[in-house]
Amino acid sequence: MADNFGADTDQSLVHQYGVEECTQIVQQIPTNGLPLQPYITPTPVVYKVYNINNPVGLQIESQGGLMAVEDPRKVFENRERESKETQTETQKNSRITLLKPMPKQSTCNRVDGVSQRIVARMELLEEQGNWLKYDKFLRSAMKRFEEDSDILVRIVLEDVVAAYFREDFRGGYTRLQHADDLVQKVCDPAQQQTHRLYLRSALLRKQNRHDEAENINTLALQGLPYMRSGRDTASVWYNIAALKAQVLYKCENSPDRANELYREAVSAFQNAIEHYGTGLDAKDETCRNHLRRSHIRLAMVAVGCWYDGTTNGTNPDLIAREDLQKAENSLSEVENSLWEGIPNRMRCSWYLAKSDLFRRRGKIQRAVEMAQEALRVAKKGDFPTEVKFAEVRLDLLRRTAELKIEEAQEDEDVGDMAWLSSEESTEETDMTLSPKTKNPYPLRMRQPRDKSGSEAGEDEISSSRTTTWAQSAVLLMISILLPVLTALLIHCMYVLQ
Image (cartoon, rainbow, N blue to C red; front, top):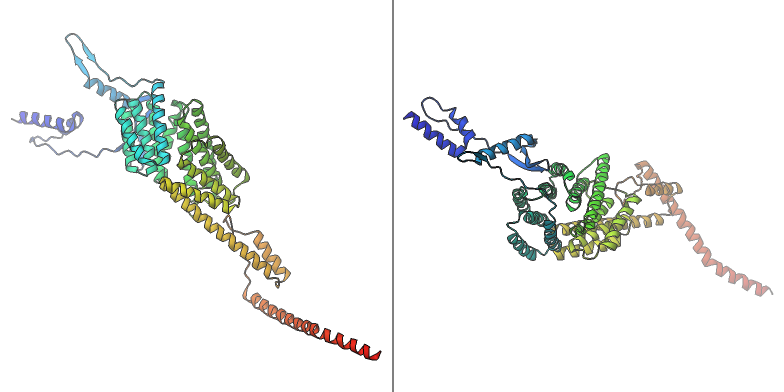
């Protein structure tokens, strides 16, 4: 009876927990035949990162704030052993082992041609904010290519970009999980896995989860040597640059850290521009809009466009002339060579960058006009991020204009206060020419005097005013009496004749 009970227990445990867990549990069964209730620890969150040298994948376990990478050779051996154990067939005179075939690496020319046309259409609808047409097109494309993993994974990943624009983070992460299931079935797993990683980094950046986004970017960089130069390699650099720029202008940084972030952001944007240009030369038209975006974002970094005038971010203060020229060159490249077919969202970003370029050069009215146009386009296209950006920019320009008006009023006051002594006037003028403030448009300030000096100054001013009134009275009397005296003198001379 005991033997039968043990056999039943063993079978139920195998069904519930599997072979390895069952072995551990059965060893703990006491002699009286009553099984212990096992404690199964929760499964840790696992991120799968694929490498060309290990198509099965690295298992990166995230427990708390730490990340541990298992030995890829061990993972491959375990997978191979499980495959052998589960797919072994025994025939009369032979024992055949069947292994699951791994995806073969190929040029994927057919896939690239079809997917580029689909992705280009999706991008256009995303930039226009035409979500009704986008959703309809997406459903049609996914249904048509549901059996073609190579094309389907590209459609799913592009839909993550739409979730980014819509700020639909839950939907974005769901699509990333779907893409992870498809990556193992495609002809270029390393390329698509890196694609998935930099999109995940973009979502994290959008949520201001900068440290997590930085970790994902580090993983994405490891895939660059195994990818074809073009859109995906450029997008890795673009996301690195965008993260550096966001940390630079939205977080407090020391001067040294701010300079380092600025250099890294500019360098990464330049790498992105180079790789997008390579993709465009290779007839990948999906690179054109990304090339526009990279030029505009580079200009934004150069002029400190993300700084909103608050004390939280890094204030770029005065912008060097070469940086202003760098921004103007990128914006001119978009306007002269890439403007045709530019979508509304990108047009809005261009206006915002141009607005800040005018602001940095002191042309406030032109800057306001560009920001107002950006706000109009953003509201018309239903772009919430750009609407907020334009409103913040207009608020900063309003405050800047108010400072300009106050400066002009103080200049007029200084001109009217001619009664000040020459020493005081010189002292105040020196203060206006060298303001010690980080505001790009500082108020002109006067140096305060102490109480004793103030009282002495008031006495001196009162005395000066009394003297001035006396002199004025004398002059008035002279001006009145002079004609009378002149007439009397002429009359006397006539009588004497």
